[in-house]
Amino acid sequence: METYDEDSIKSFVKKVLLYRFPNERLKHEINSDDPQKLNFSCPYCGDSDRDSTKKRGNLYLKTLSYKCFNDGCQIWVPLNKFVSKFALKYSIDIPKIGESEKKKVSITPKRSNLIEFLINPRVKNSLIDFSELKSRFFLKPCKDAPEDSPISKYIRSRRINNLPAFELTCYYDSNQDKIFIFNLDVRSGKILGFSMRRIVDGYGPKYNIKNYSEFKKTGLISNVDDDTIQKIDAINNYYNILNVDFSSVITITEGQIDAMFIRNSISTTGVTKSKSLLESTLSKSGSRILFDNDKAGKEESIKLIQAGYRVFLWSKLIADLKNKFPIEVNKILKIKDINDLYIFQSDLNEISFDQFNDLINQYFSDSIYDLYLI
Image (cartoon, rainbow, N blue to C red; front, side):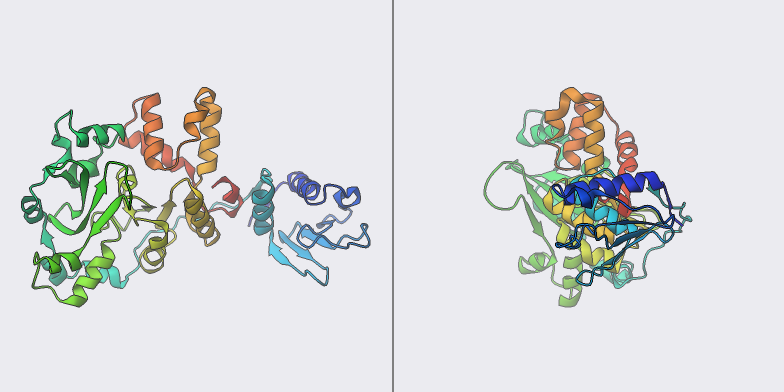
């Protein structure tokens, strides 16, 4: 059962009415004669245009729900949706509403077709050995690139040179204008595919993903059937999926490099590819979302928190950073993703992989009341 502070709710409603009806003083009034509810003009429909004294909106304190009795409205929503809608619309601080402590839920992976496919010995034996591709393209580990090389300068500028996943999966060729990021099973040395990340600005996508369909066209593989290839190609959309522990919480990021900064993480190479993974393979209790701090990432995170997923609260983090480091506001406002955040923290003070993850862990929530903090 949720708990609440009545004065805080009343103050919230008052602010909503002030924003909703800025020039109608009579509609700013709240009737609290009934101890079970607050009665006020409905901020959804605007209530009566002909009679400002009519108040058809009712917020029920016992059931924590809102109901409008205007014939043209009749909206009926839980308090959490009422709060999240108007907190987001008018940038109002949420009232002091909490939820009872949730029971600890054991995390178990869904027994999906994806997991069944991954553990199939026949499929594992069909995957290409990493060493074969590495030698075929004359690739070298990025961590061993000469200090004055374009590759080395890029990875140092992005602060990815000391990340465990980077050292294992990132290589370069003689052109030194891109990073090869392998979707690698570090235990078996098998790969699902790889992507080439361009390190210089230019036209076109930054990432060029290579999969088994292309390997077959070039003759790199010949003994894998088309149905298996199609499934492997689909799984290759999820970077690092062969290495995560499905019995622990899995963090979903957008970019492959972003995933390297986070423990037990998968990259979906874009917000649109997360839906099928979440619906088919990951439970709500076993996953959390860390998309970019941009319009697309925020919009998708809002949808997911409304569906019950834990998402990252970028606005809360940015606000905390501005309060803590007021002279760095200009830099803070330029943080658009997890890599930018790591760079910012590293420039302030050297931060380890574990310390960074401890910081990140403080900013996830599945509460609808935190929607405006995304």
